[in-house]
Image (spheres, rainbow, N blue to C red):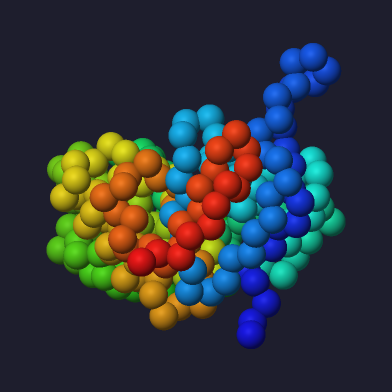
Length: 230
């Protein structure tokens, strides 16, 4: 069996100091492996987003051990952390597309600054990813011409164009209607299936839970239960 893509052992994290300190994560232990499509559920304030930021190497845990893609994040300097983040794809509640760029340019932008960047190859990869998300003919369009669901598809394309080992989605359907939201999650599941990657999706959307392979529930900073999807 291959090593986990993410390993958390007794991870705790909080914000503030002294009397103002607030514990957000408490003793999280978790393995994520290639092929996992995980729904992370729980009420607002339960710690879901903080856990996703740790998995994205955007923060280093205060306590416990965290290994991402074979690396101990505690031992990494800023440059190495940046390189690690480039191996992780992010999809947010709001798509954060740049209106000054075309649809194609928004996807290409994710490849800028890569150590092995090649303009022609990067454009071909971006075009192929737009085809994969069903927007092959829209690359030259302004993002303002797209529906909310289409804009989130561009965000998925941007997250996956670098072929990340780990994909993190924070409430990706929250601003979409039911049909568009399910289409985005179905797309995310299909595009990551069969790759050596894992997906963690923080969500309140009960309508999409049948699409995941595993469900984790958080409450008061604790992983209360782990369920295999039906």
